[in-house]
Amino acid sequence: MESSCELVPFPLLMTPIESNYRACTIPYRFPSDNPRKPTPTELSWIDLFLNSIPSFWKRAESDETVVDAHIKAEKFAQRYTEILEDFKKDPESHGGPPDCILLCRLREQVLREVGFRDIFKKVKDEENAKAVTLFEDVVRLNDAIEDGPKRVENLVRGIFAGNVFDLGSAQLAELFSKDGMSFLASCQNLVPRPWVIDDLDTFILKWGRKSWKKAVIFVDNSGADIILGILPFARELLRRGTQVVLAANDLPSINDVTYPELIEILSKLKDEHGQLVGVDTSNLLIANSGNDLPVIDLTRISQELAYLASDADLVILEGMGRGIETNLYAQFKCDSLKIGMVKHPEVAQFLGGRLYDCVFKYNEVSS
Image 1: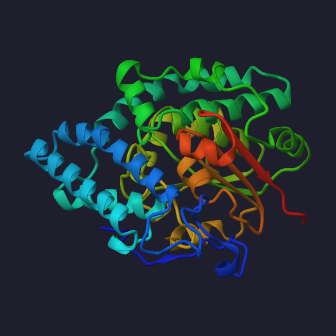
Image 2: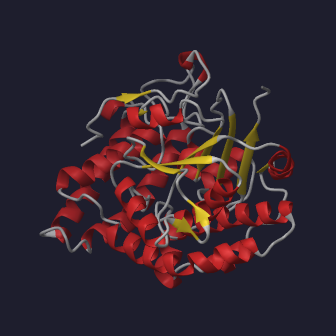
């Protein structure tokens, strides 16, 4: 059930792609490792995916759109557990050796095979509805900050705060089921700077001195993430005259926002003049990325996005899946920004940071 149209490489990747690009950030194994024996890194990531099964099972079980959901949910949990246990015995099974893309893809595949299409739909809709009511307040709070650099920092903090709403993380899924997430509290409670990768000061300096003509933003979660984090930031870019392309997933995957959902969200946020709280949106485009996972391999995107992105001069990858676990070291022909919160202990350990640390990686390409 992958995207139906043919997928192509993202046109702004540094070429030759073969020698310059590897999607997955954390190497689970090296050429010298025994191909028949799982590495310690593979084992710890397999365990991470095993630990996420109960929260997926619970979501699937309560999917009212699926007949016999409880039976199918149990089937999902059994099948996916078997696959992960197989990897522990033989890393080359199921198209391995495993990396984060394969582990995510197999999970989605099993969910779809047993009959689930979008087990997070209910929670996504609820969170979107909540965040829509807060959008104008968040935007007006930002607009009230007259100091340019402070406003940019506030918008960035909003992206991190929104990015907390990630139900792919077992700890956060549990926290969320207890008491939901307060966006403004999350803004205040970010880990103190300097973050584990912290190019914010450089970025703010550039923001004051240069303007980009077109930015492509790969978006992440529904709810506060897209509505209170990314959209106020995109609105600020629009206000400065930048054309903005928001690239969203083709098919549902965890609580990531999809292309149809994003179109619906924007129709609710725009006023009768097509504006986002006073800012014209004729330069805002929504693209289907062709992706169906919470991570992304940029050699496989939709032709539509490739066409829209070809003349962009800023690429933003937001969220742990697209900007940290994949693509953290991706090199582009233009300026790029990887921004996300570290929500897995394994990622924190790899980066030498703290859990819930922030990554703000800005690379400028000298013109």
